[in-house]
Amino acid sequence: METNLDDALQSITKQADLICHGNYDHTDEIYQFSNPEKYPDSLVNFVEAFGFMAVKLEAREMHLENTIEALKIKNEQLEESITRHNHLNFVFMNTVVLLSFFSFVLALLKTQSDAVSKIATTFVVSRLIEFAILASSILLIVNSKLPLSNFGLSLKNWPKSVKESLYATVLAILCCTLFKMFLVWFNLSENTYIVRFSNIEWSFAFYFIVAPLQEFLGRGVVQGTLQRIVPGKYGWLMAIVLTSLVFGTLHLYISPSFAFASMVGSFLWGWLYLRHGTIVGVSISHFLIGIWMGVLGFFI
Amino acid sequence: MNVKLETSEEYALVSLEGRVDTTNANEFENAMLKVISDGHTKIILDCSGLDYISSSGLRVFLIVQKKLTAAKGQFRLFGLQPGIVEIFDISGFTSIFSIFPNKEAATKP
Image 1 (cartoon, each protein chain N blue to C red):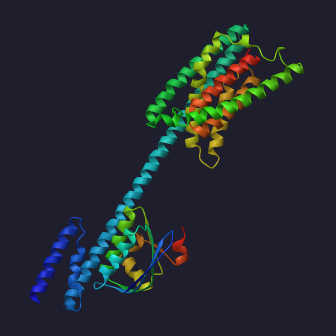
Image 2: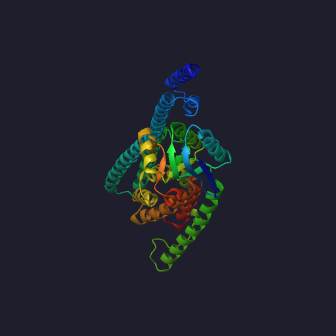
Image 3: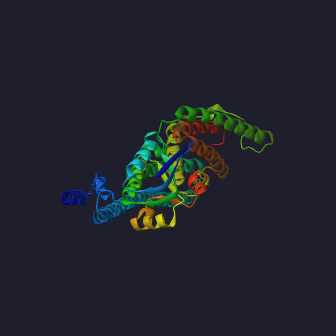
């Protein structure tokens, strides 16, 4: 019996040492001494009490590990939320600065009498603003540490994106042409032609760069960021509406009706961007529709 | 102690009856480990017939929980008798195990 007691004490001491080092893998070795048919009650009770304590300790440790794991997840969510909040601040500030600056420019332009000079100045100012937004957007992307694909700079889904964008573009071009025909037929248009390809001048070459640039800024940066930060089931819709309002406003310098048309176009591109998450298709669509607007004489 | 197993596409239902102590904890452990090794990652344990559990039996619960957590599975218990609930409370098991009042609640997805 004494040998048994010695063996039991040695085993329990060994297990206690292992438990102190966080090792619970061999705790079951002590249970051989808790058989009431082989060992005295005092030993059985002692082993059971020790075993219970070991199990409780192991359970507590497991609970702690689970809590730490849950806290890590919460922490990641919190950091993500802070990043989203910072993006919102950034986009909001940029939009306020942009719209304020643009409004000032428009007000200043009102004082100019020469129409050509007005358009030329606004064209230059618009490009300057786009450049400024591009620079701040690059800063935003670098600071966000998010992949470029989060801002529409991705070739993923591009064939599907191009295909759907082209279908939508053809439909939009058809609608715009019919609208122009309606305006011409009822003498509501400033010009008398339906289409005039000579409207496309060298200046439209800029559009090859401007269209993807505007899509990157409008869809990739603004709408993409809003999609991530606007909460709720219809956050995506709010993102498209807000982006389109800003997009339309930025085209006010041409005319209110053009701004409205731009807003409608922005809804279309916003929806296409939402579907594919790449600016490839929407840039092509923007370019083609923009050129066709020139052909129809809406730009002139 | 008696261990019964019923399986379905969604889960494995194990019914545990009688006493789990030093003499049969290994048997219980082997039965549970076999269910896991058979590929079941959602195990529901019916404890309504469990009368007594010793520390060696409690340890088997911890082992199963660890294995299923590692396999991103689920280990759910239901039908615990008041005496067993008390042991679970004292040992801190109630905070780490998913315990349900009945089978309907435990088998919900």
